[in-house]
Amino acid sequence: MTNNEIQNPDAPDPDQDWQNAVQRRLTKLRTMPVELAALQAKVNAEIPRHRRIVLGRLATRRIGEVIAAGFILAVVSLGLMFIFSGGPVVASAQDFAQFHEDLVAGRVHAVRVTTIDAANKALAAQDSLSPQLPEVPSEQVMACCMNSVKGKRVACVLMDQGGTPVTLTVADAKDMQSPASPTVQRNGMSYHEHSVNGLNMVMTERNGRWICLIGRLSSERLMDLADQLKF
Amino acid sequence: MKADPTQRFYAEVWSHAAEVQRLANILCRDTPAAEDLAQEVMLKAFRFIDRFEAGTDAKKWLFAIARNCRTDRLRVEQRTAGQEQLSNFEWEPEAPPVEESASRDAQAPAEILEAFSDREIIAALQRLPEEIRWTLLLVDVQGMDHVNAADVLEIPVGTVKSRAHRGRNMLREFLRPMAARRQYDQQ
Image (cartoon, rainbow over all chains, first blue to last red; front, side):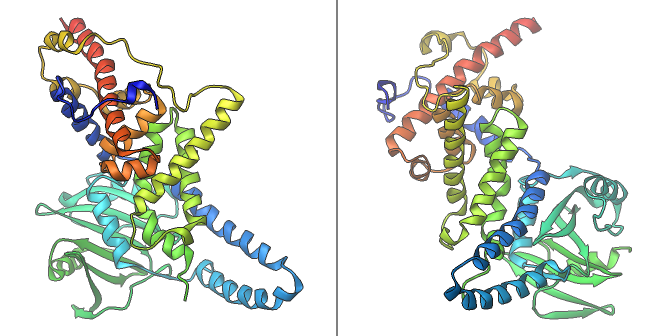
């Protein structure tokens, strides 16, 4: 620490307006959109590799530990096979709620679009294997982005439902499963209902796609919206 | 039974990835360096997820990792090229006395600052000494309280307060002449 730093921060400041204004201006940087695609791709690529390194170390341990390690290896391998064999992962209601909040708050990089067609094109440009979004009334479409949930691709579109933001997330039904929850039957469709901190979400499967609608609307409204989706 | 580290990582830590990337974007002067830093932070977080105590502040934990990664990187850079000073407190912008310069401003401070784009504000932040930049990033950009920022930076709370105060003054002295020049150009 230098002498410059020794000062009394509680002393009257002759230019407090500037202090406040600079602080407020810096606070606005908090909502600046960031590009997460590179980070997400790198992390997704590295995590399975890290697991292989851990397994490799286990296999080189002393003989006395080999039997125990072998057992652990078998259990972990089964887990890895389950996770990386292309089998479905279970969606976490908390994760999807957090994702919706981040998207609405601008903490997730999203592309502004006004139609589902534009959203599908933007997502395909980011990832050619992006799940196809179903048609929704175009006046509701605001922005779109790609997300990765436990290594599975999830296409997302943010919509405006009469002033309330609603996120529609779509994954391949082979990749994603709804977590256990009460189910509701409606118009021949089965919906899983979840609620996290006042955010409601409904999850269902249609035409080989797993969909989740999230927003501060009643589950009935979200199911109404799901009824309007055209696959 | 111990929770799966991958599941813990995505459930408890990943939701702060955007904040880590934003912090890196503001700390580093170019995009590849910012991406590298954010990646290193998130991968370290995954590697050491068992050291993260569930229910505690994940963002603060990530920022502490970011702080260590950044310090290590700067040390390497310093050794190889001597590019960046870790604690360059000698530098100051050329500033007129506050009273004199304040009387010069016809516009309100907030109005002057709003005229700058985010990119320009970040460029000004990047000209500040590393320690001052970190303090403003944590306290003003990320909205951390002084105590948590002091924990991340491993310095006393009073030092956080004085660095934040000093950093805002330094930013003001960077931006105010730029705003005056713009006004002059427009006239």
